[in-house]
Amino acid sequence: MTRVTRLAPVPLGVPERGGATHGRMMNTIRIGAVSLAVAVLAACGGGSGGNARGVEVDGAWIRASIPGKDMTAGYMTLRNTGDATDELVGASLPSGVAERTEIHESVAVEDGSPATMGHGDHMTGTTDGSTPPVMEMRRVSGIELPKGKAVRLEPGGYHLMIFGVKEPLEAGRKVEVELRFRHAGTVTVTAEVRTG
Image (cartoon, rainbow, N blue to C red; front, side, top):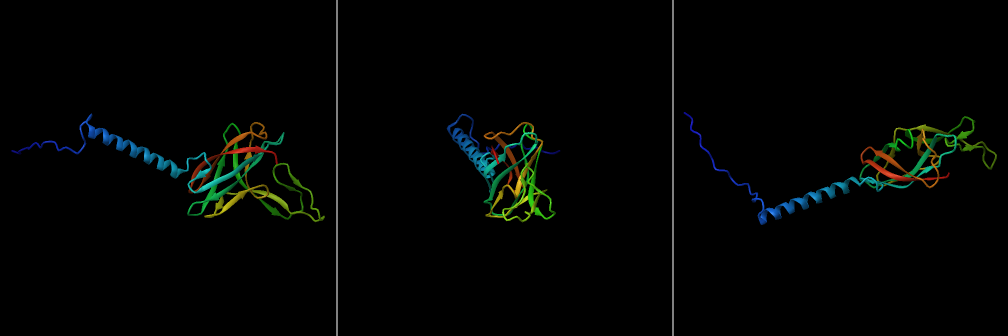
């Protein structure tokens, strides 16, 4: 026959509910939880402030849409303040504003045709009479952000190409732009609509 011995419960150091020690311990736990939440949010950059764990976004703006055109472009400065290279890999606007957003780069090509910047701007010549380079837009998979450097998205260079604009984007309007970075994650910034 097997003999079963019952052991008395061993207190685990948790004071009984309602006691003074219990109250102090619960306050300590609450303060610790709040401190942890604040630390996590700070590490994530908070999103809407234009800073995503080492990437700062400044001067975001979108070119006002041209009547009859359903595309436009977005520009800004991206500054990598982190301790490693990062990359802008995607962007989007709210679905009620535009259908899709792509990362593009304008590059000079030499084929003799008029240059189109993609926003209704055409290069027609230079002041010295020579033929200007033709600018062609190309979709790119991302924009590398070297550690400690700033990269400008600007007319004639890297930019966000915004397609399927659903309603006119008039100067003065504010639009949220979601940016996705390979390492820093997602950040949402507010871009002002401006004329060219």
